[in-house]
Length: 77
Image (cartoon, rainbow, N blue to C red; front, side, top):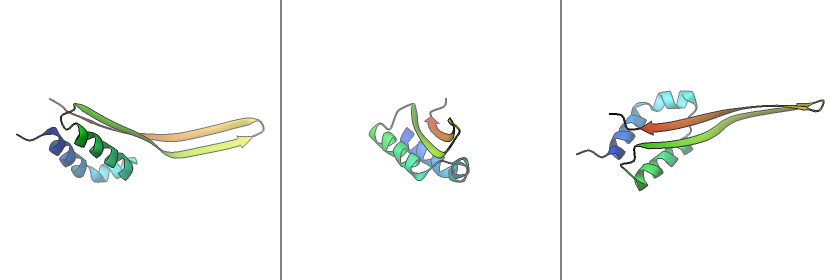
């Protein structure tokens, strides 16, 4: 019987190109791998990271924008 850990790793490898286009970093993938190594049969594993941040200050105002990427791996039935 194949463990969920192996299934998750196959999915991550299959969608590596799509993940990089969305903005998923290698750090996020390594966090997920570590989570799945600790508990290989968990139903959900997730990692969040802010990849881009912009801040502009002028005349007493501040404009701030950020891009947060969330990578979630779930077991589907």
